[in-house]
Length: 258
Image 1 (cartoon, helix red, strand yellow):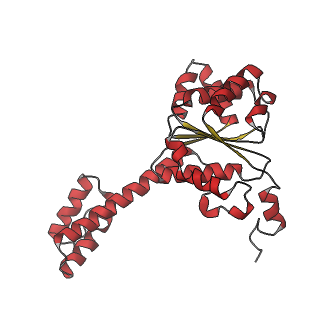
Image 2 (tube, rainbow, N blue to C red):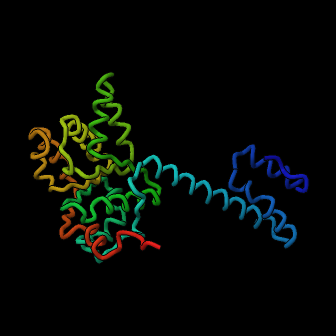
Image 3 (cartoon, rainbow, N blue to C red):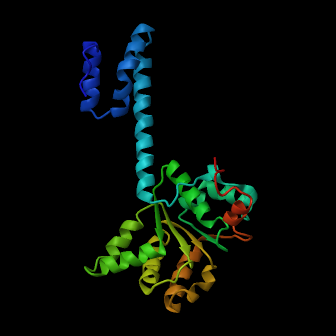
């Protein structure tokens, strides 16, 4: 929007230049900042610093928001909601995973164990932390992979589609073994693991250890998949009762009725 009629001509020109140079975050506060700078006799460099800092902060937030949206996280859970007292994963292991050093080394994470023991939450929280660290993340389910293979088989573009979904620093595949695995999903999963091998980090959650994947998919595909998946992997075995069930039984699963 054009500068208001009460805006000083010099400030209006600065705002217009910010519009031309696509500086929306600095432009939003420019009038107030420059008026304050004049009234309080700021050093000119200070006014410039405040405006550039606002632009940098705003751009960074927009970039992170875009990466979160592209990742396709299921719920938005971060480590702010993580309760270490309910997790069967040792604190030292969680602390190491949060450094993201394993992602930088193109290593994998496998969280396996009973339903409700925090596997998906761990993956999502790590995914959000990776984005905060400037990395890109892709979130998939086995059903997503099955649909992808079926959709792109028609025009023989499966390989291209797999390359696109694995073009991230961290690729998460959630809830393996929760539902029956179709042949298309098994093929898609193998293709993701193969495409990411020693090039990208994979993080998967599964109700069973990868050693039992031949119960979910053809043995030849399972063997080739697990061979690549486990070669550079950290395996976190979760145990215990469902955290969701524990919270429900303690009254923490819902907000009190008014």
